[in-house]
View 1 (cartoon, rainbow, N blue to C red):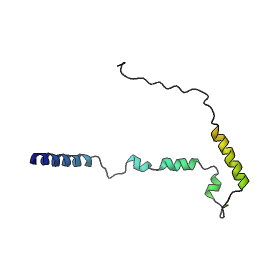
View 2 (cartoon, one colour; view 1 turned 90 degrees about the vertical axis):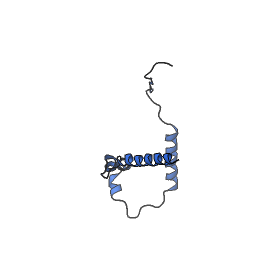
View 3 (cartoon, rainbow, N blue to C red; view 1 turned 30 degrees about the vertical axis):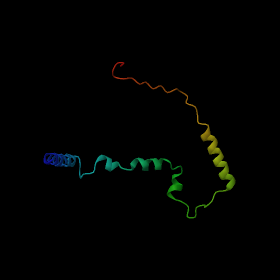
View 4 (cartoon, rainbow, N blue to C red; view 1 turned 60 degrees about the horizontal axis):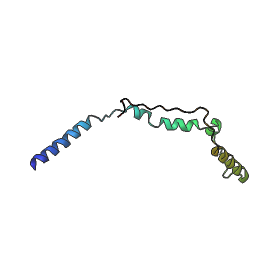
Length: 100
């Protein structure tokens, strides 16, 4: 039983030492770029830069009912009828080995 405890302790110590070699205190490339993709995506969705940079002091708190209904109906019609793919997509899958 003592031999098993020594082996377990030795294995745990080895695992700690090996995993310590994977850590670093310096920022990695991922850390330097973290969050840029989200910021770029949000930035790309801005339609009117001037309005985004200078928002109104008193923005409208409600939408005209008829106009809101028309916008939603137009959205629902466009989403329900996606454009067809003009060219068919071909996916080739091949294995590196022969048949089994």
